[in-house]
Image 1: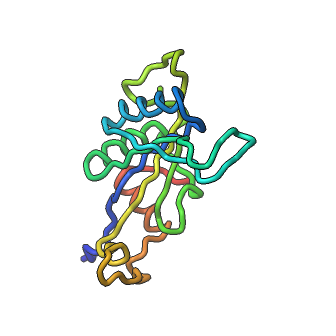
Image 2: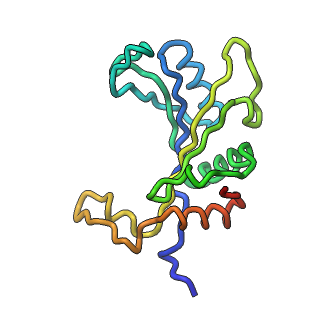
Length: 169
């Protein structure tokens, strides 16, 4: 009999698209993310100035959307099918979260190539959770998460292979 508090679940899926500049290119990226996720994206801003790329600190350079519950699970299944349900072990961080990229938005079902817009890629960041993680995030009586409640990369790999049938190489 397994402990239900040791079971992993999907906390959220963040879809991020960095276009590197504001203007029409960013608006096109926002429209694509909105079509794919059916949610309104928020803009992400540059943290520092990079003169070589023409980026100023505080300038909008990307957009992102956070998906939770059933919408997150459906989106994750769709995007994993795009990458042929194969992930690298290097895509998992030490906290059990993982991310992967989709090179072309046209790979997504229902999306077609428009020469006026071009091709955009986006990142999919997946955050896993285990019951009891809230003690490290709450405001009142915030505590450190015990080691037995932490998610290791091995836990995440076994979860993603058993639940979604993903092959980790």
